[in-house]
Length: 480
Image (cartoon, rainbow, N blue to C red; front, top):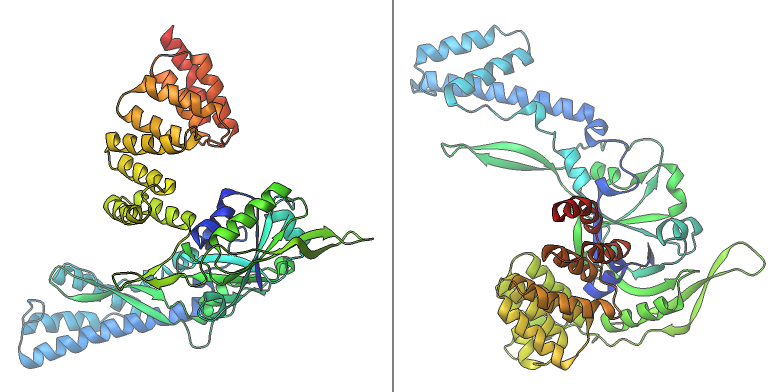
């Protein structure tokens, strides 16, 4: 079993609601690599550069001699001109000067330099930092991990089981971390590589960059080696060539509630798991071990979840196509990703297909309204949100969405009215007071009232509220 320690946040909720985990890039980790692949493989790289330069010069010389023998043109040079070039090249005293002469000749004759041998391996360190990493531990009882990664025991620990066909069961993607204060050693076989090729204007191909194979042992050692001071973490790493969102790497099997995780949040995560995880999830809690300052894991009062998701998430639809059944949250996440990418038509197609089966489903009406709004069809979006409002009145998020459509239609006074109503309801969306404050300012309303709403948005964590508040003195001066 592998455990992910998480604080209580929307990003932790998204592990359940999206069916995915987020792999951070190596450069964003709290333990950045102390070494570089160029440092690890310096001697090998130097040898490869010498080999590449020697091969380039030798190939040029052989081709030139072949052209002389056949009395054929060589980059537009006559046989005598080719002989002069070869004679000049033979006077160079070492490989460096020979390669530099060859390089200058190629630029003069061809307009393009040969492959840049000296910088050919320069991208391997950036490749190292682009790797996606999802850090896990084999132990759910490490107090330092609970303190560091769960906001002082207020969060949860999510257990993933390696299962057949999943990445945690594949040694190519699941690496045990080695703890050492020395940099990894270079593999005797050198780097496993994948060449990238580019095309010249004349259609010729040339090797343009060097990329390590993801299976390269030295590369894998670099992304799975940490200083010994981190050894208490007992870490394993699920890795991908790049960072981003990827499906659960194993079966989501356990939730361990932190010592200080509030009861209502425990119930919330249980419901999330029941709606979004197709299998039973065993539940545990951390308590202080009697008579000690140690912690232990015991079964929660509810032993396991009762999944509402179908165990078989794949099925064949009426058209004979294989489709994946998603929870409401997972489907909503996928549609929002399409909207963010600008793939509005695909988002609407998927939503409309589902609306044919469930024409009054609130999450579908909300998604369609958002897709219409993002595509600039604000009247249609407003109509969709108003339809939703008739079914489910006094929902803060729906009132907010209606206000966005109204503002886009230049109906600011109507937007303010709905935002005031939404802000009086129970909600945790900082965009509601933020938009309310901004539109009040925009329409020449009371700056002091706007400040109250903006301060509320700032306290709730809106990223732009503080910047707008700083501009208020300037706005007051202009109004005066």
